[in-house]
Image (cartoon, rainbow, N blue to C red; front, top):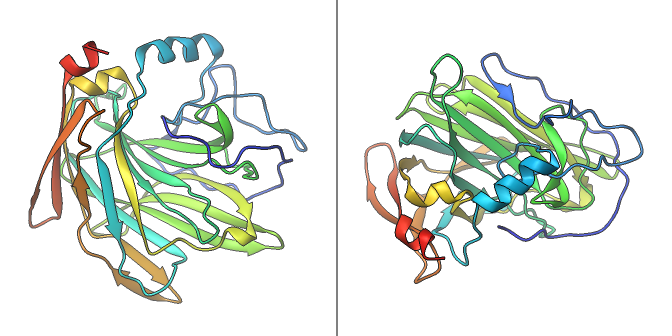
Amino acid sequence: MRTPFSMGTSSPSSSSTGPSSTGASSTATSRRGSSTVSAGRKPRRRLVRSGIVLGATALLALGAAGQSWASTPTLRWTTNAPTPVTTLTLPMSVDSAPDASGIYFAYYTTLESGTRPYAGFQPKPVDANGHHMLQAVFSSFNADATTTDTHCNYGADGGAGVSCAVQFPYTPGTMYSLVLKRASVTGDTQLMSGDVVQTATGASVAHIGSFGLPSSSGRFKNADQGFIEPYLTAGCSQQVTVTYGKPVGTEAGTDYTGSLPTVSDPASGSCLSTTSKTTGQGQQVTVEGNAAAAAGR
């Protein structure tokens, strides 16, 4: 599991609440009730990185099921922009995956101050209508993060921060883009927003969530890394194929398109291995779990 970046205490201030898209469901909701935040304090809730808020019993069950790995496959990406950017567009398709939770395909999205939100996709079980489902996540470990967005709750990996998530039906092989923005700056707070769109058309798919950060956090860096993580033990026995498209950074109305991301495996310490090839759509990466490695831990 990733380590929180900034630990401490702060009082939440107001930030905008994003709309919910038709066909998508927010999963940042406690089994004990809604994620509404009372003014002046942060609720005593914990989130796992899957973006789902869980009660204490469920957290204990998940802790027993999941494993923390010393290393994971690493993603490297760039927008080729000459400066930091206000908007990031990060395309990915899930080409084949089990209809199950287990693996997180994440992008780090470091800001100018060094605080590092991350965002990504997780395959999920089918919904009640049998649709393939993806979960999109946008999170911050910053202890000064605030939110009033109903798709978000306080906490990240059990520590300080804010985590936002939404599930939506997807078509295997279709490219969807995470659109992350420094949406506005008001006084000493900047609003960070995350949405999912269809890459080919730009049509809105789902609102992930939004949260406030200190305005000194700044814009997104033009290049960064990411990871592919088995956040549940089940991920170590799965095989998933995804395709990464070229990241786009937007600043002052100009779009900058990067090269295809690359993925590399650690020398040891992971139950996942990857193979990559370039296709007409992007960089296709097949992730294969090693259940024997997981069983040996």
